[in-house]
Image 1 (cartoon, rainbow, N blue to C red):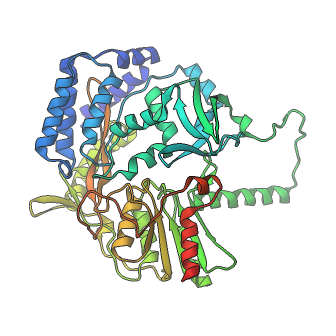
Image 2: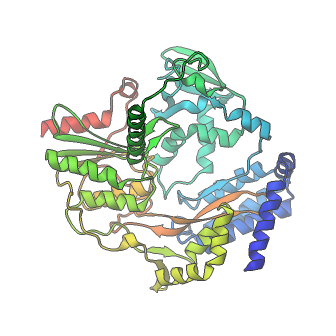
Image 3: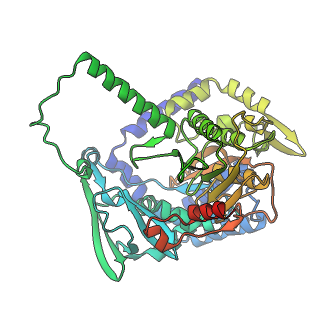
Length: 524
């Protein structure tokens, strides 16, 4: 064990001492054909060893054939990115949306990184949505809002449709789902573009608004340029506060900080992860928006459902659009407020190994101290994994605490429930939607979720790095699914009422889905 820890320390120190130039040279060279074949073999062996549902949507024979065919196409030396673009589409054939394939990027010199800390890339401040077979700019956090409502036609000379086609091949969706791709690519368009092109000083974009086609160049600009008015701090005299004023200011800041935690404030996006309010003239209709299941949540749910209980609210709208998932603990807590009966959120998870937790901790991307803790206390973690794991019908299962039966919350909401979903509703948000759909607790509005109804492979992850190309692969270790199942397998939660966003309504700030629900409530 001591030797292992020393080895980790030496390797980590060596990597940290590698210069940016040397590192960039290492990942920019072309790798030999035999070395690329070895990386392909290692990737497949790791998937076979770790992924519990590797052949859930594709037979072993077909996947064997695809990996063999991949090796045959590698008939010349490849750079890391070129190898990634060949490997990722084959791994995507596994059709498990939590599998991720990535490659190392070129590093920036220290001076450049320090310079960019004071800058913001204008293009990253834009939000996009895929509507009517096109990519539309729906919001900007910068100063220029005149471009909102524009359709993107070309980015850096490349057709937007071609960018979408390329990205679709590189990412995986759960099963045979089709709604996930366009929604998630649009939602994360800036990120995918940066991943594909790396660092760029400026970006030329051809847009169309109404009948006008124009070109806009986005650059790095100073962060304070997003403020409406610059303040010359040299001319501002310092304000001397009394003891009472300082106390009040401290109390105010503490209150804001507490609310930011409760509602999950994102400083980067200047919005809350969780929000709750009443719609209309009275409190008969409530609207809850959850952008992702992360952060501190207990106080928010308790506050929201206390308000619902006090107001005797009859209709609740739960908006899960573009929610990528997150904590199973959080959706379990939320479901306890929505169900009238005892429930089990998820089943025990199928795994391939008894050392699931320890394997996840020892992933290459974890901080050094996590690996040291994992190494020192490995006997304890192995014992814990053994206790949690048991065999049934020839398969290994991991006992999650959320697979135990739980009681409804005393503050549970018993009124009418509407849930809005779309193709970017994924992972934990899909599991929650599947339980609400399967138990017939809610009316589901929107389009098929990006996450599969019958579950997905996630929970804990093992991150591996291929030896030569340094391509990185994220592999889920647990099959996570709920008690409700549908046939055929491989599709998301289907809405009871299918509604797609309309461009005209979206650009005019009208929410088609919420409006349909309000009309339905009024008609009833």
